[in-house]
Image (tube, rainbow, N blue to C red; front, side, top):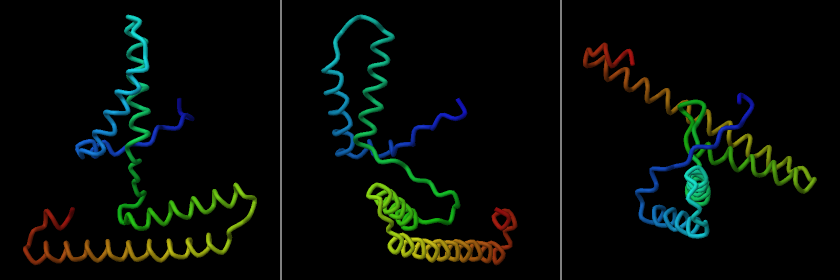
Length: 140
């Protein structure tokens, strides 16, 4: 159980959007239409569960979380782009060292910029709390 990879979390909040919700419902409906009715509750449950899983994989994007709270979505996109460049170079048997190195340098700069922005924001919040003599929010 420990070695099993967990399924990535999907952005289920997007189901409130009409486009995602309709696409998700259509996927489930088409999948359930293809199943037979055999009066076995366990089989029906397994089929329904599999239908929901496959529909979410087809329609909902994976939620990406940063390990560090200051990393921005822009930096996460750069990291994903670098990962794809690496996979593509491994597939083709070629090394895309130059492009990979450029992306790595851009990621380093972006992470440092994100961290500086986060620290500046924390300093600003601390200064505002200190100016208001609000020690509770100062310590958060």
